[in-house]
Length: 195
Length: 195
DNA sequence: CGATAAATTGAACATCGTTCAATAGTGGAG
DNA sequence: CTCCACTATTGAACGATGTTCAATTTATCG
Image (cartoon, rainbow over all chains, first blue to last red; front, side, top):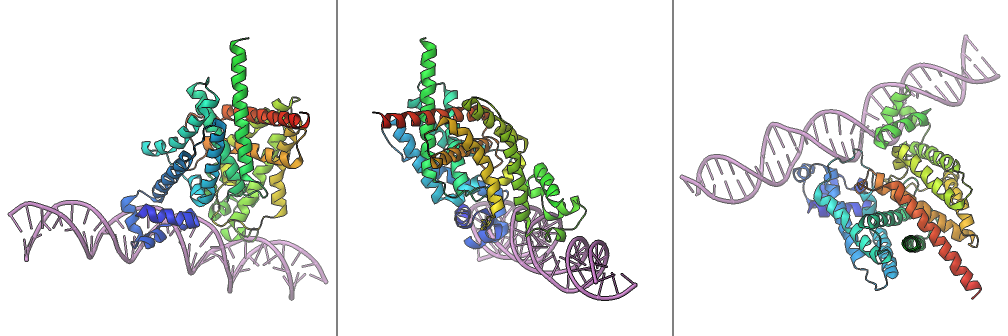
C-alpha cells in the first residue's frame, strides 16, 4: 500500500514529489508510519525501483520474433516504449544517491539481473562461439548503450534532453552496430581457427 | 570564486555536499551572498557542469591518432579516464532535476555541443558518404552508448554499479561495433548505388 | 568629505527526512 | 467480560536545507 502510493507519486512528480508527508497523506496515515515499515525513504524508493525494473523485464519479455536481429530490434523498441511511458520512474532508478547504498540485498540484485539475462539470451544466436563471460559483457554493453541514448535524449538532468535527437532511430542504429560487431568478431574467430 | 568552491565541494562529496552554507563557509562568506551572483543553487551547479563538460572536451581533444579506428578508441579511453577521475562531477551533470530547467541559455548549449562535434569529426572518415544529419545521429548514439556504459558500471544510482563489469573492455567493444556498423552501412549504400 | 550605489549580512521562513515517547488498537488467557 | 502483553500509529519535535530580504557595511566618485 505504501509502495503503491510512493510509486504513483514518483510517476507523477519524480522522487522530490514522493516525500514522507505526501506519501502518508496519500494513504491516510502520518509520516511516522512509513518508518515502521521501511528503514528510510531510500529504502522505500528502492522497492519502487524494483517494481519498475520488473516492469521493464515484463516489457522485454513480450517481444517475440523468430529472426534474432528482429528480436533485438523488438526488444529495443519495447525498451524505449517502456522508458518513455514511465520516464519519471525510470529516472528515479538512476538518481545518484547521496550516500552510496552500501548493502545491496540479494533479492534486489536478482531483480536487476533479470532484464540483463533476457538481453543475454537474445544475443546468443548472434555469437554462438562466445563464452558466457563474453556474452555477459556484450549484453551489459548493449544495455548500457540503450540506456545512455535514452538518458541523453529524454533525461531531465543538467545535460540531458538534447533536442532533435530521434531516440528510436539512434537505438536501432546501435542495435545494427552491435549485430555487425558480433558478426565481425565471429568472422575473426573463424579466421583464427582455420587460417 | 564561488564556482571554484562549489566545484571543489561537488568533486569531493557530490551535489549534496555543495549546499549553500558549505559553499559560503568555504569562501568566507555567508549563504546570502551566493544569491547575489546566481539565481539559485541549480544555476550555480550548472556553471560547474559547464566547466566539467569543457574538461571533457579538452580530454577528448588530447587524443590524436592517425588511424580513424584507433582515434575512436583513444577518445573512448580518454572519456573513461575523465569520467572515472571526475566521477562525482560527472554524476552531477546527469542528476535529474526536480524542476526541468526550462530555459537553456545559448552559451550552455554551445558547451554541450562541443564534445559532440569532436566525436562527429572522428566518425567522418569511417562513413564518408553519410549526410551531416546521419553523422550527427551516429555521434549522438555513440556518445550515448559510452555514457550508458559508464553510468551502469560506475554510477551511484539505485541501479548502477553492477559488479565485475569491465568498463574499458565494454567501451572498446561498443566502439568496434560502431565501426563495424558504419562499415556495413557504407557497404549497403555502395551496393545500392552500383547493383 | 559626503552622497549615492553596490555588496554583504544575518536572521528569518518553509520544507524536508527522521526520531521517539506517548497513545490507540488488537488478540488472546483467565 | 477483563485484563494484559504486544503491535501499530501518532504527532510533536529536531536538525539540515534552499531561499528571501530589510538592514548594514563597504566601495565609488563628484
